[in-house]
Image 1 (cartoon, helix red, strand yellow):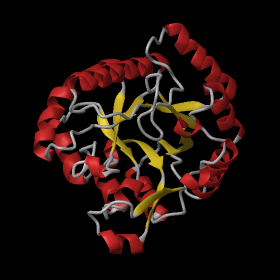
Image 2 (image 1 turned 45 degrees about the vertical axis):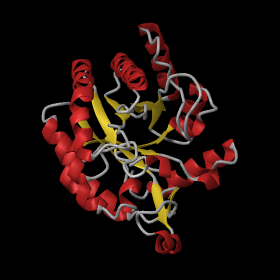
Image 3 (image 1 turned 90 degrees about the vertical axis):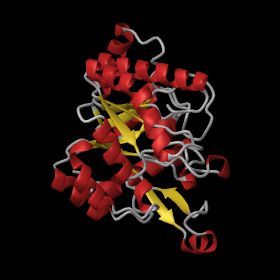
Image 4 (image 1 turned 120 degrees about the vertical axis):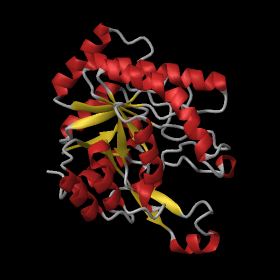
Length: 302
């Protein structure tokens, strides 16, 4: 396995600075964010370390030069919108940009593009899965032609009562993953696995890794701390009782998680994803968050 980080935490830093930090701190790889340039509509979105809107062969060569200089790899390209947004115009914008991310990955020789399946929060799971086939068949065909695998992250994207009850991502649990892989049995579709999204759903992370190990194409390392007092007060259907933390500061059982990964033979990237508000006050704090996470994870990732 190769230890890296997700570039979203350095949204105010240029690509070369991100790669230089990775090299100086001994990280093997970085997942580069590829949002369209412009304003973000939520935290950690709208980060553009690779502008793929007009990405040429010359642009790809410049990026490869930076990677050679700093001796750092790209674990994957990341773009995490809602491809099933209920607004047809926005859905088309998202789909068009996702195809550009896939094309850029092919130019760079990057084998993974990470994203969400998406969801209309007001739609049922069954209704959403009908939409998934229509929206995702052409995207997966483009990925297959480009030699790129799609890594689906399983965050429910449920943060407010406006998104209740469905959230903005349907691919949140093993039951839905099974349906997706049955729907697209030969497609270049896999999981960008993040244990933090399972721990607060009370889904056994190790068991999920063992069942879906061959489908895991990328891993995010983020922890989640459950607040038992808040959980008691509002119940599992409430909001605000779990908080993203750095690896080792929450309730993920990291030993069990990495034991399962090694049992399944996973040997790909493990990228730290910093979404811990306690470490967002300055660039120095964000850098410290990655150093601290790296030291914790090095006991599992050589």
